[in-house]
Length: 185
Image (cartoon, rainbow, N blue to C red):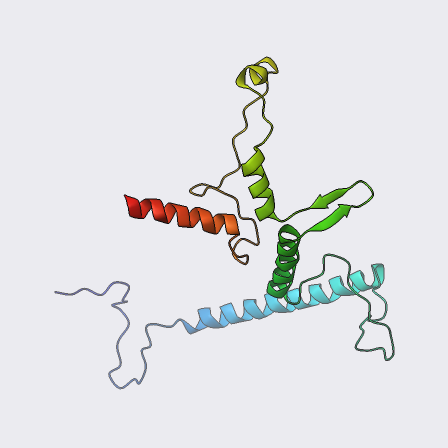
């Protein structure tokens, strides 16, 4: 046995009616539409007066657009300026950085300061070693021990150009040595 909730039992149902007369309350819908129109009208009038008061208190002046004025010099917006081709600019930047770390050149010629390629610097460090203090000297100086910079799961920090640069000769030799040791096992 099904019951219908919200149905008025005292309203007679006309079987010849082509719509349901019991569902929509027409006076309520008309009243809602009237008050909605009043709210919209009050809002529009309020916005009109608000914008007029803003215009009077702080005039903006004529429109400044480079499209309106003919023969006007184009003014650049203040920094920071959006990049037009960010990927190409990153490639160019990384190419300059790669050239600096892989070629010889003067940093300060009067002082005799030069730059050398990374591969050559690694060879010199491996041949000569780095100057270091003994553990006794470090303890006497109360020098803290600093761990090398790493990224979780990696042994070296590549930086923003890491995915664009090629492996150095030392990295290739290291990978070959590790592969050779793995094959021996």
